Length: 406
Image 1: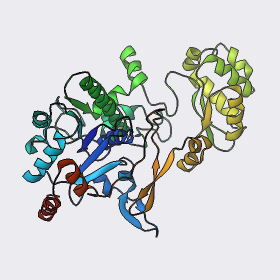
Image 2 (image 1 turned 30 degrees about the vertical axis):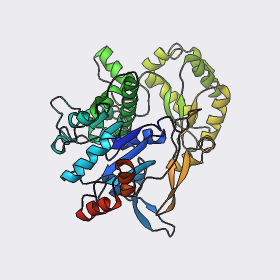
Image 3 (image 1 turned 90 degrees about the vertical axis):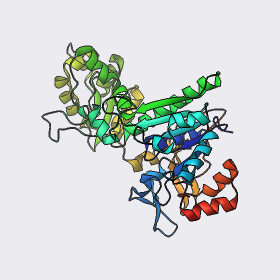
Image 4 (image 1 turned 180 degrees about the vertical axis):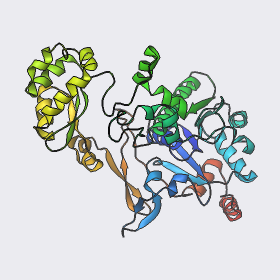
């Protein structure tokens, strides 16, 4: 039994932030019912290529993007723009613990599926709304997407090569990180609301915004600004507060050096054949190294090109200096630590026989994550869920299917 196997989640969300939260809850054992539009479903089902291949190497209908955030769920197709569909969703919400939705502010009120409407029939309901800008404020009614929020929320002002360098300019993160972080924060909020409910409180409405999360996750960079009044600039792969803490060229590529304290810098200088750096009045402390970054970094780059990446990693690891290669994803999933930790798993799939997945990073000793089923086909569980959860008769389900509600 998973840690959350006593809970039912009604997932009305699509794309990434909401589904990511739903998948985390599902991995931890919750029953997650994903409500999708008949015929189309979650937008990401069409976000390909790439698509999952069948046993003959032909594309299936399942996009890799969709597969990344929807395992362990059940797919139910309901057209809740119609009264019959709205009633079905309300009945499912009445029997659920959690609702996750990411419609525009007020978008579900027209269907009687907003928090106040569902709270009236299920006061213990935890209702998590995810939007670009939150339920209040001058931007509340705007649509918000990850890329746009990375720019508006300051992340892209910090990501990319420094001004004056070749290729300088703002760069987005290579994955939809704001969506992912919002999904994680939403999960934390849901679990906090559950804890409150379990202590005798009722349900509540959770207002999650991509912009709020993006600004909150600026972390030390935000504090660098708030404490100085000076907006940080792009530094490429360098760190604003630690030196050396970036990539360096080697004889056959590049590697990452992450010196976190003065002792590690001394060890690095010895491995680099430049022990005098550790006592140089310009470099002896991190504060001095940050101040004299422009002097030190070229000296290090001149030294690192004389050994291969493997040599640097091997020698520095032995000396206790944090470092590592810059892997592509093929190298990541072949890495012995990644393999040992089982970060790639396979699940049986109706169209492809099996589908690969990235494992959950959550390791619980008593209630481990379970991989019960692959991301569902569109509407795969409609009849099953409506009969089991709502007690509907087969004939009633078939009639709604014929009428296009399901």
